Structures are given as structure tokens and as C-alpha cells.
Image 1 (cartoon, one colour):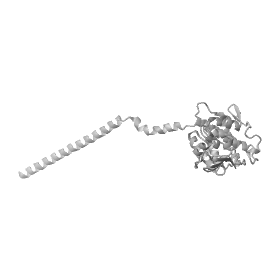
Image 2 (image 1 turned 120 degrees about the vertical axis):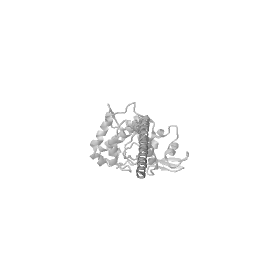
Image 3 (image 1 turned 90 degrees about the vertical axis):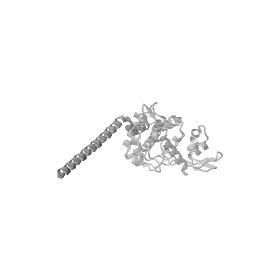
Image 4 (image 1 turned 135 degrees about the horizontal axis):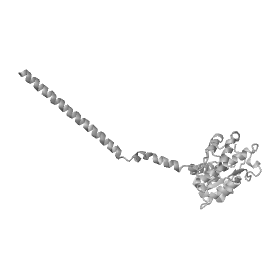
Length: 280
């Protein structure tokens, strides 16, 4: 009798234990399901546009820096045939003359519109001036100086849109009228005493930095300008285009803005001889 009683008690305890385990397992499973449902509900509540938000500024940035004209062809040529020091490999340009002429043709087919920004227009005409100057030298490959060419700045050799242009027209009738004196350190006359030809094209999105760097670089070149607090010996560019540097300021104010040396307003002023030898 005792044997059967012990067996009954053991069996009852085992059943109770298994039942408790099933309850616990069920409760655990139910808890997991509740968590899963809650997590799903939370994801559904989230605004899907929030997940895409980080990409939005990047898209806006791309729109902001869009260029009105693509100067990449000229940029590639300058990278290949102009040194960091500004020396121009005209023979190299001659071997790639088709690419240069195609770029000039594209300028003629895509004239600046009134809707273009000032930066886009400046970049277009600065690059046009430099590309046409290079083309002028390639038309006269035996010269040692641009001044060996008859009327180099007055020849109307390039048709842009419906009009034939000379270098003087671009410089004096277009660029100088845009009231940006730093263009004088961006456009290049193929000569040693000119500002160096940059080995990259000017672009609207980088124009401010490029113009500032070109100006600072030119002023810091002691072969072209010698500056001290009480005396300045300047490139003749500052004499030829004096009024361009005096918009609501003095010439000394302009120099001090871009020079590492603070020049006195009473500093003596003179001009250096200009070397017209080819910048090759």
C-alpha cells in the first residue's frame, strides 16, 4: 500500500511541475510576441522621411554647386600642359589642339545667359580669354613673345555665338566691366611677367577661392612685385589698370587685403620692368 502511495505522490508532483513549466513557457512566448508586436508598431509609427533625412542636404549641395558651363575639357588640358609654376608646354597643347578647338567651339555654342550667376559669367570669360590666348600662340608657334605677333590683342579670330571676338574685347568690354579687379591675376597674356597661368580651369563654385589665391600668389612673387612697409615696387599691371583697384579704396588698401606685409599708406611707389618673353 505504501509503495502505491509513494508512486502516486511522485506522479502528481511530476504533472504539476510540467504544468508549471508549460505556463512559464507560454508566458515567455506571449511576452516575446508582445515585444515583437510593440516593436513593429513603433516602426510603423515612425515617419519614413525621417530615415531619408541625412541624404537631403547632400542633394541640396549638389544643386547649389551646379555649373552653368562645363569647363572640364580645359581643366584636363591645363593639368596636362601647365606646370604648377605656370610654365606652359605649347608643344603639348599643339598635339592636343583638336581638344582645345573643340572647347573653344563649345564656348561659342553656349554663350552666357542673363540667368547665369556673376560667378558663372566670370569663370566663362576668364577661361575663354586664357584658352584663346593659348590658341593665338599655337597659330604663331615660332614666336618668342606674344608681342612678335601683329596686333595680338586686336585680332578677331574667334567666333562666339554670332560675334567675332578679340582678346581686348573680352578683357575691356566684358571682364573689366564686371567690377572684379582680381581678374587681372587670372587672365594671362602668355608672358613671363604676367600672373602665372593656373593649371586648373576657373569654376563658379570655386571662383572666390581661386581669385583670392591667384592674387595672393602674384603679390608674393618677388620677381613681379617687391613689397615692404615703406616701399612698393609693383608690376605695371597696377599702373595700366590703376582705376580698377580703387573702387571705394586706395591701391594700398587693395594690396594690404591680399599681401602678407602691411604697407603704409605713405609708402613710396614705383613699377618694375615688364618681361614679355613667352611663358614656356
